[in-house]
Structures are given as structure tokens and as C-alpha cells.
Image (cartoon, rainbow, N blue to C red; front, side, top):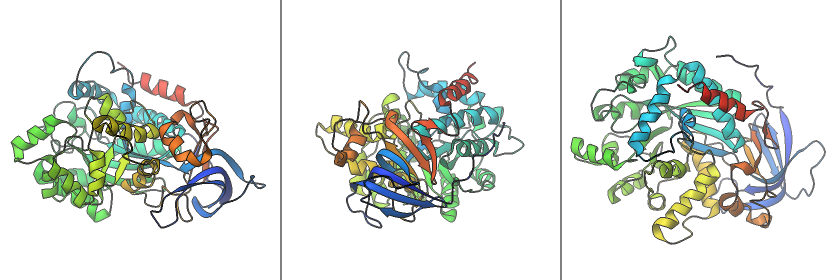
Length: 462
């Protein structure tokens, strides 16, 4: 891969004037509020001071006009799935038929092509106001399962892609060892497998955190990691205080197969092997029993909902409201990238619940934004992000309040406007670590993101 020159580091100190900002009370879970004329001072990538009541930008301050939120967190991503957008919509099928098409793209990835695609995808995320991504990464090896000279070449390509696109990444290095409850990997899955959890742990232990990147772990699913090896992955994450993610009960077929193999649900199997807990996030959690919900809630295991993918693949509607009431913190992800729009994910979670229950108002706009910001970052191990307050990482997303979608409502209703009216197209500015990454809808490091996406996707076609 070719590495362009690194952009200059952020200035040591700078000030942003936020026309309107969604603020929380520092150190509390008090109700957020929209304030106007907010001054945010940044030094060394973190917020050092937040002041209110500045009617106009002072000299030297950078004005962010619109509603500024903490940077958005995309807690579940498979970057290479972006190459499938639109191409898998014709005809009928299920998750399982879609998966075969997805495998075809995975078969063609190389470290260079994956870097180019991920760089463009992460730049698209920045344009959508996403400042941190959780990359659920399982394409580890070359075709046929042969390791690259650097066994982590594919993961390193993703980490470098995030750096070049200017966003933070949690690389969720994924254990994927089986095609289903002990069966050997099929020909597509050989690229994913390290053969054993111990070998997986040895390989991914070499990859290190850096300023913009943190290393976490993932269990692809209970069908892809034999029960006796689940604990190895869980202990690896627990010993490092690293986030651990797992696809859970996305399909009823997986639930049925788990019952046949182990006489219990996937959630119970994970609990029995020490996987659940506050450092773990279950992704999808679509088809759960009452006991499953109680287990996830009582252990404070997080839940990442991906409504645009769950509806695109006809997976079903997960019990997000029940999970949160049981004690499971919620986060959001764009998963297969049918669209990349965390505001849409937040809106869809509420609207899907309305369809299921035929009642409205399951979450406030503020609660949905919390899932998209602070709780999403926490799920990725970036606990110091997701808030606009002193000490927090200086990651900001500004949404236009004068577009055809957002014009009209009073600024004090900014949270409602962001969730229930705005889209990724309304993101005007994105700031990461104090650096003004997206300015007036233009990415400063990848100036022509559509061209980068088109070229990267074309390179992966047959």
C-alpha cells in the first residue's frame, strides 16, 4: 500500500465557538440540554474548558454553526461489506444467501485493496459525523488460510486506513475457528481461522494500541468458536481490560443449532463460559428468550443494535427496549453499511419499536443520542469520549439546522431535530482530537471521498 504524507498534528491550543451545543452536566447522568454560544477550548486533543453565553465568535475562534454534538460512535463495522452496497438488493433471499455473496468479496481482499477500501469507508464515516469506529475484523489471512509474512497485515491495513481517514478505531480482532459448532471452516472461512483460540490469542497479542487505535477482541458467534475455547477469548480481553464483542442470536437457525449441540441458548452458553459482563457487548441480540434478556441485563453486558442492517437482511427487530430496562447499555452500529448514518440507526431503533408495539416514545431523543455517543464510545473502550466537557477527547460533530430536513424547529429542540429529522447528509463539521477534519462537508484528508469509494469498490469486482 502507498502511504500518503501524514497530516500535520493538531495545534496545541485552539478554541471552537459552537452556535448551539448539546451538553451534559459533567460527571452526572443529568438530562442534557442545548446551549447557545458555547466556547470550547482544546489543548493536546482534549477539551480544557467549556463556557456558555458567547453571542458571537471571539477573535481567533473557529465557528461551528448548527448543532454540535459529541462525536458519534459506530460500534459495529465490517468495512469490506461496503463493497456490497446496492449490488445485493435484487431478487429474494435470506441472510444465508446474502452471506454467500459477502464471502465472494472477502475472497478477493488483499492488504492493499482492504486498506484502500477501508480508508474510503472511514472517510465516509467522518463525513457522517462518526469519530470512532469498532471494526469487527475477521479476514486475517491470505487465500486458503495461509498467513501473510506479517500475520496481522490485514488488521494493520485497517488501523492505517483509520489514521489516514482521521478517525479513531477499536480493532476488534475476531476469533473465527469453525463453520458451525465444531465443524471445520469451509473454503471461504479458511481466511478467517487461526485454528485454535490459543493461536488467535498469540497472533493478536502482537498488535498494539496507538494514539488513534485500541485493540479489542471479538467472538464471531457461538457457532464459529467451539464452546471449550470461548473462555480463552474472554480471558484475553479481561486480562487486558479490552472490549469484547460477539454476534449474538442474529438468526433463529443459530439458536436452533446451539440448542441441538449444547441444550441451551447462545446467551446461556456465553454466560456459562464467562463471556458476559460489563466489558462485553452483544451485537444484534435479535432472537432472545426472557432468560437471555435477564442474563444480559443482570451482567451489565452491552447491546449494539444495527437497525439498518437488521432490516436490510430481514433479520428481525431485537428487544432493545427490554434489554435496556433489564440493565444492558445500548450502542449503535452500521454493520454491513447498507447506509452509514448513525442518526438513522438511532431513529430506526425507536421507529422499529413503535412498529412492533404500536406505541410511541420508547426513548427520548437524548437517550438515543447517548447510545450514539457516550455509550457507543464506552462499548469501544473510549470511555473519555462522547461528551463535551473538560477532560474529554475533543471529538465533535456539527449538524446543520438550516437544511431542507432540519429547518424550522427551534434550536432548543436540537436533539429531537438531530434524531428525528436529520441525516448524515446534514453533518457540516467533524472534529477529531481538536483537528477540524470535515469542514463544511469536505473531508480535509480525503478530498474526493466518492471517487475513493468508487475506485476501491471497482477494484474488488470480478
